[in-house]
Every structure is written in structure tokens, then in C-alpha cells.
Image (cartoon, rainbow, N blue to C red):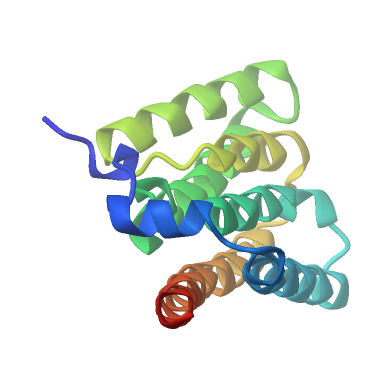
Length: 171
């Protein structure tokens, strides 16, 4: 059975993606950078627990590198990141901060990603962050907002790749 979240994007997109000039690369990098800065601003404004959101920066970079890859689909991002946050928080609440809770949340997140075909590697860091440092349930709501912003990045990045491909084809 083929795993959708592990499937690379279509060959034509990948070929175009590899041939971008410096201006095109900078244009593609601008969206993930702006998204991460927006998430950091949101976290700084509403919370002081910045570490919980570090894995979203990795997500944004993966989306920049290959927005068409199955790992970077909105469904995959949302299921893996939110599932990891919930599993990490549950481990913290049951076992407290420490190695056992962190290990359990990491293993549970990996199983969730495999069983749901939603493999997004930065989610493992999310599980560890929540299991080691999360003490306030409101972090889940704030994290969900940050994930939604990052999911919007997927859509914007795919549109940017499409526009750059059209522009490159004309010139």
C-alpha cells in the first residue's frame, strides 16, 4: 500500500523547483520566513513558551524545500502536528516532565503518523516539546492557531511555485 504522505510531488514541479534562479529562491523563501515570524509574533504576544513552536519553523522550511511533497500536505501537517501536541501534553499530564513521558509521546507520535499516513517529521519535536515543557492546556489552542497559519503556508507556497513555473516557462 502506497503511503501518500511519503510520495514526492510530480516530476515536472520537482524539475522546475530545482532550476530556480536566486531571485526565485528568495521569493519562495520569503513566505516561510514571514510565516515563522508571524507565528513567533503571535506566541510572543500571547504566551512566553516559545520552545513549543520551534518545530513549526522546521515545518515551514520543509514546505519551502518541496511544497508538493506528501509530507507537506495540509492534512499531513495538521494531523501530525496537532496529534503530537495532544500526545505530548497527555504524556506530561500523566507522567510529568521527564524521559519516560518524552519517550512515550515520541513513540506514540511516530505510530500516529504511520497509522494515519500523515508522516511529517517535525511533529516528533512537537511531541517532545509538549511532553517536556507543557504545563498549560491553553498552549494547545495557541499551537492550533500556529498550525493553521503554517497550513496556510502550504497553499501559498504551492501557488508561488505554480506562478514561478509559469513565469519561467515564458522567459
